[in-house]
Length: 123
Image 1 (tube, rainbow, N blue to C red):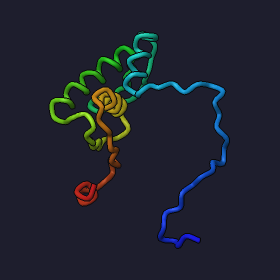
Image 2 (cartoon, one colour):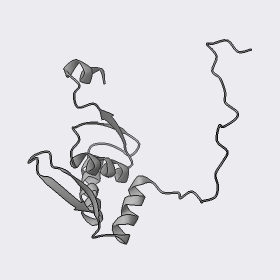
Image 3 (tube, rainbow, N blue to C red):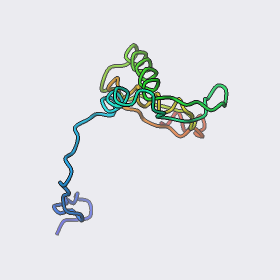
């Protein structure tokens, strides 16, 4: 019997494999690109803008364009594969940045927007 300090290796799943629908091999960035081509004028996101507090609606085409600008800006300062912290409230810019990071190949590390300075230093 393994001691409590040794890792347990799971060999069974509670749920059996469901292969009734094939898995799509998409990254989040690729999925956004595909949806922007398929549904360019369909509303993708509705949210409040950080600067104005006004409601914004972004179509898939607009979301993809804004995310591409974020990706370009990120790639000016980080490399694909890097981790980027995002410290922001729940505003429409949050998913734009998340999709931009996906297009750039970087990983977002979401930080709680209510963190105080000592919490931010730790993070």
